[in-house]
Length: 216
Image (cartoon, rainbow, N blue to C red):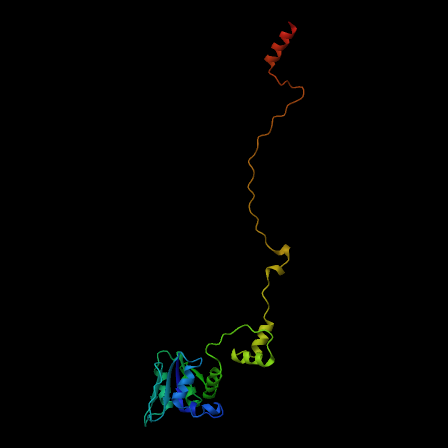
């Protein structure tokens, strides 16, 4: 994403920056952006007039002065109009004419005061902060977390009304589909030959020979 900043429109906002950050200028603005959620984006600061001094702003920052004829407003609108990917541009301004023009091209927009508020908010968050799951949050700390993650009452209501997924242990046992393994039939065994009581066990010839010998 690329940020196109209506620089003077942002720097002339009052009542947003703390007293120690008032009058920060373009260099101070870039420093605050660097330490914010926008720190990895490409940034173009569009300014009216000609430069009075030069500052090292960093590789992702470009300071553009429009000169004595063209205004910063016109420069921003022309850049959006000529862009091959206007939807990837975020314009920082509160100027109504610019907003109307860039929205026709599908560009995103954030107001100057809201942008400054985000910079101030991000400046209070340590860069090495490790977010841990809190326990026993106080109302004040809970409010800070909600503001940090953008959670409002509407989101909380949606989460409250969202049905919980049904766990397998909550389903009655008789409703759980059980997959049974096929039973392999045992090989058929040969039936044992039954012997009748009056049926001779020895061969007939052998019995006759035995009778003959006994008779002798």
